Length: 172
Image 1 (cartoon, rainbow, N blue to C red):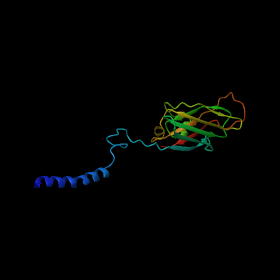
Image 2 (image 1 turned 90 degrees about the vertical axis):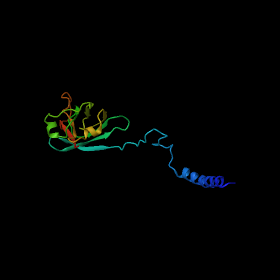
Image 3 (image 1 turned 120 degrees about the vertical axis):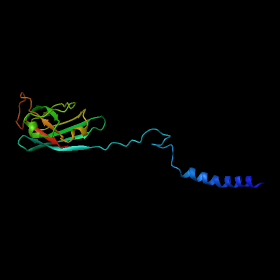
């Protein structure tokens, strides 16, 4: 065998283990996020929520309200648990600012897409409601926050009287 074929044979024999070692130690090209798999790696969203005290016009705490990212649909879940309100159906409005003083005086702009059913208050003055609105939580918690206004009850209702209005402020 001449010198050239012996040199090629020696290089080939030495190169094979190096090529195998390099192939075994290289990162997988078939996993999520690789060039071979164009699907993006998606992590589950972290649930986010914000709670606030529900206060009547006199500043007394009469319940609580929670805004949370909806688990199964795009939007925000609004939960309200109240006590000490007048009997009847109280309209609920999400406002685009966390200013409850202004909300209780009748000013404040409703959040578009945040239509809510009313809060039905029983004879004991309590009521609960949970609903999902078509507004993202991050939009409700922007720089000026938002407020949940409980409006005056339907005047046709009979029963013990309590607070007519209440508000929960969610600062941004």
